[in-house]
Length: 305
Length: 251
Ligand SMILES: Nc1ncnc2c1ncn2[C@@H]1O[C@H](COP(=O)(O)OP(=O)(O)O)[C@@H](O)[C@H]1O
Ligand SMILES: [Mg+2]
Image (cartoon, rainbow over all chains, first blue to last red; front, top):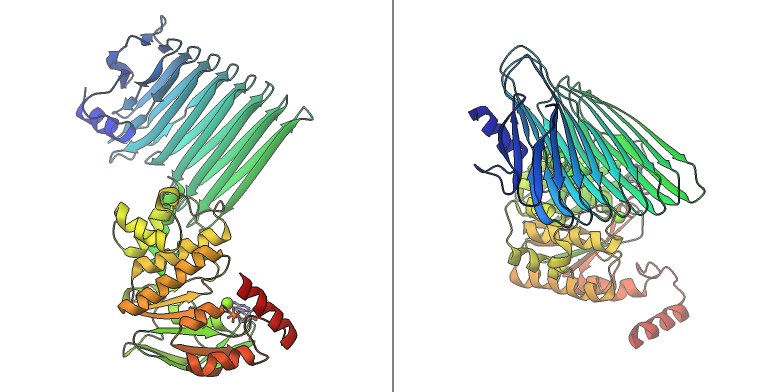
């Protein structure tokens, strides 16, 4: 494994020279370390396009890490990973992506992840995206996530992209069966001339299913973000989406939420708030002795936590 | 320690709110500022903290002219202000605010001590976000705790009693009295609460943008309660007042 990969692993996962549990480390499109455990199998797909991660039914409290790192320029990484979470299992999946680009050429990672959660299973999915390096080449990450939740399954997604990615297009799609629950917390920060697009589409098909979608973002400098969400209620269900964005400098954010209720018992809510940091918040922290810049930083840090 | 010299302040549309307020506050002790709603008390507090600047007049803090200093500089010199309407923050926790106020990390024991003074249990509250999920009384108590955490030279509390239940309120009065007894800074408390006025050394009545009365508690309070300008009870009717007092006594 390259030193650059190790540095990225520290940023995008809890790497401390090793992982606890099953893992696969992807470096510049190739696997440089893989481990399956008794209950979690990490297997390359037959066609070589990615991995199948298979969690045995009833597995509790285990973790699997599948970070992907790109350490060179002029590289376009594409990977298909499928997660099969067995009935009643309860696991944590850590899937970070880091790009280190010191060149003038573009570096891109495009991870297509599909999650199949069986009845009553629960998974927490943590995804961190980071870009580093001195090169002028653009760093892009364009993840596609598709989620299929069986009866009473629950997926909690916690995603964050807080620095160094020049362009991103994030697409997340979900289908919830009876009593299934999808919870998504997204944290996004763009600066300079970065661009970010996020799209969510969740279909609530089962009785009593629900989605809670919370996106918090900050657009600094000349960066531009666009947020689109669509929640479709096809049964008695509850859907909530919340898009909260702070803009500073010349940042721009556009949010278009869509709610489609196709059932009279579908209860769907959307909240959106976009604006600069409230002046009174900055004033309050200044009365603690912070400067305006320090206050702004603390407010943004807390907001994106 | 603080001198407000001939302070004038107008609203952005030019309506005069403070009209020649002249007030000096000595070192230590507890000064209560009271008076009818809209009289200009909060405006005066903001002028002390540097959130608003006077159109005319001078502010001197510990011998230094701070009239042109901004909020941060005044805070660094030892002025704290507990807002009448506390600010909410998405994402910042009670602990975050307490630590920012204190200017250092606070251990479990320190957080517990601060929060218990305002009637909050650290275990329940330290991780809570200071967002819309806190009730008015809860956020008010957090606001007061941040000022206690700062332990600054001058502490201005703006209607600390608002929204606070009877039980926590008794504790709060203890906290004010304790600071006074231990000589921790100088307290200025804007309040309509008789029980707060009772622990003040001095009472200043601000009405219609002017200092209407100013003197030792025992000189002002009895006469305040008698006067038609009673800050607690807008009804001067002695019969209503007597009934009110009887009810209070039964509690
Ligand atoms: N920024 C402002 N713009 C317009 N009017 C203001 C502003 N600030 C205060 N006021 C007015 O000044 C008066 C005094 O307000 P305030 O100082 O809050 O009074 P108090 O705290 O004594 O109740 C009120 O009538 C209030 O509406
Ligand atoms: Mg007021």
